[in-house]
Image 1 (cartoon, rainbow, N blue to C red):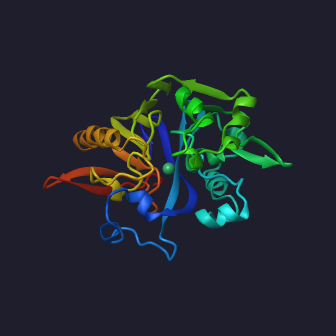
Image 2: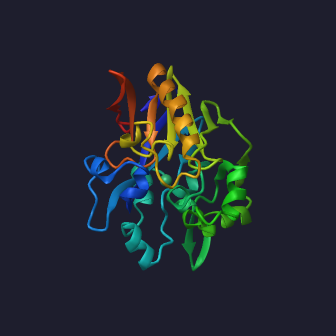
Length: 280
Ligand SMILES: [Zn+2]
């Protein structure tokens, strides 16, 4: 779809699986399993949703999915598909990795930045050789020294090769990346996570990543257990969901396996969701 001069497309980074309890925090399984069925290992299917933006002659990717640098054991644990669903989706959009000018990572967890790099002749190299990679400076610093609580979400091979190649464009707080595309901090999941806002033609869209990973996380207390600051998530959600409803934003979810994007509406005090097909 178009927001003014900006073309927005959903890039499907493939399905993977995480523990259902971890994805719904304090919500009992008896409630969440009615929304998302768990498999025999208590895992629920999640998509690695990414966006391709084309504007002013530039090709911009938001998120790079899980990537392909996985051994058999981790592939089994997370249920990653064989092959490279992200590259396939990009190819269907008519683009090659070397044609990407900007990559924006909301944060550096493996399910958002895993495709930043790839293996070539047993060496880890940037997947997008001509791109500037945008992340918050404080997120890169945190990723290099994570805590015991979140270190399983970071793999240095997703970001050190970007540092070595000098391809970072580090952000300090909210800022515009190209006209109509901005990053804005949405703290809670961690302190440095950023959403990506696209505005044009009187329309607004925001990739909210793990702030609202699926449409089932729209109720305020449905907050993922991975979050380092769940009460901050609560307030960030309250602020943004209110604004999304009021101003008719399109919301792109980081991990919804069925509907990557939609609009939100007030329905007798509850937030109702209406899908939007970004690729139409
Ligand atoms: Zn995530």
